[in-house]
Structure formats: structure tokens, C-alpha cells
Length: 172
Image (cartoon, rainbow, N blue to C red; front, side, top):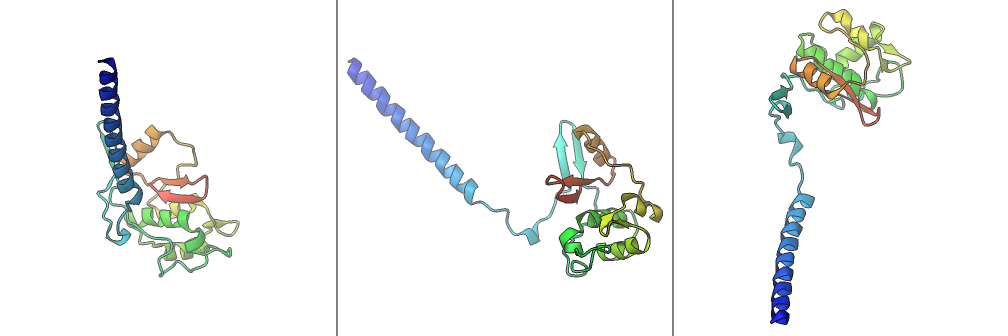
């Protein structure tokens, strides 16, 4: 009787185990082969973060691509880089300015910055230089806490964040 119970229990365990492994493998296959779809048809819901009772939206920021053919090949500042290769910070600032009413796409902002002391060391943006346009106020460079970032976003502030260990800037 004990052998029968052990045999039956082991048979049930292995059948159950095989079922679980099969379900996990099928789920993994779907996950591993999934893609994000057609990037050209992506439409944002505008929600940047949902946590607790707070929802942070993108507040309708203008979206520019730094490699757009209209300006991507333009020289950035006075260095050998182009807007496409190194203009992420400046393009993020252009999104803020355009959203706030100053019609500055990355190409026109790059030209304006060149003529108005907006670059240091060739192609490093002088963050406060665009304050002269009257719609922004540079607040400083900091390592911000999650709560201060969320607070700024919920108030509609444009926050240009440095990501990828310093290799890229994005507008939050």
C-alpha cells in the first residue's frame, strides 16, 4: 500500500511539474519573442508615472527627434559633432521652449545658441543661456530624489535628465 501511495504521489507530482514547466515555457516564449510593435504608430497616453494617488503626465510636451532630417546633420555648436550625434540635451531644451511658446526646433535653437553664447567648449550647452528667451529659468544641476522629480513633473516643469551614465539627455 505504501509503494502504491508513493508511486501515485510521484506520478501526480511529475504530471503537475510537467504542466507548470509547460505553462512557464509557453509564457516565456511569448515574452521572449514579443516586440514593441511599429514605433511609427506609437501613441503615448501621456502618463509618465502612476504611483499611489498621484499620476504624472507629460503635459503635452512638444516632441522632437534629434536625428530628424531637417536638422540632424547640422553641426552642433562649433564642434565636429552633429545634432543627431550629440544634440540630445539641446533637443530636449528645444522641446521645452516650443511647448512654452518660443518656436525653437533643434535646428533654430542650435543657430540661436551659436549667436547668443549658448555653447561652451564647442558643443556643451550653457543651460541658463535660454533663460534670455523669457520662458524658462534654469534651476541647477542636481542629483534629485524621486519625490522631487515627481513633484516637478506634476507641476508641469520641464526636467532634462541625464541618463545612461551620462551618455544621453532626455526630457521627462
